[in-house]
Amino acid sequence: MAGNYSTPFWGSIDKKVSERQRETKYGVDVSANLEMGKFLPEASGVKVPMYVGFSERSAIRSSIRSTPTSNGKMPRATSPLRNARNG
Image 1: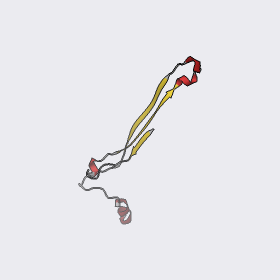
Image 2: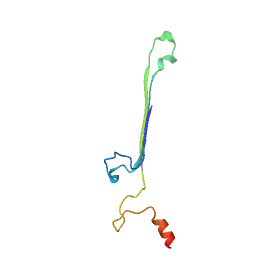
Image 3: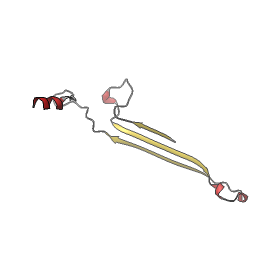
Image 4: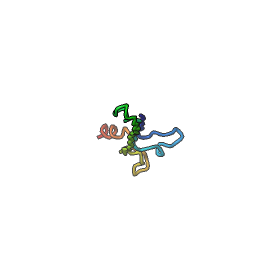
């Protein structure tokens, strides 16, 4: 069994924020080797090996905005507070 999970802006420290991933990614892998011959009488001497595996990968796009506004500046997180105070 194995799994992974990563969120937006995950990436190496030498990459710019704009070069990092923009989605939430997850993955799951499960596998097993079974001996189905154990369900038969021992006298039959039949061996039935069976491999079972399951894998799933998904990516969910994020709506996080990191593009400049029309004036070329990045939006500030405090803009709504500043507008509410002045308005």
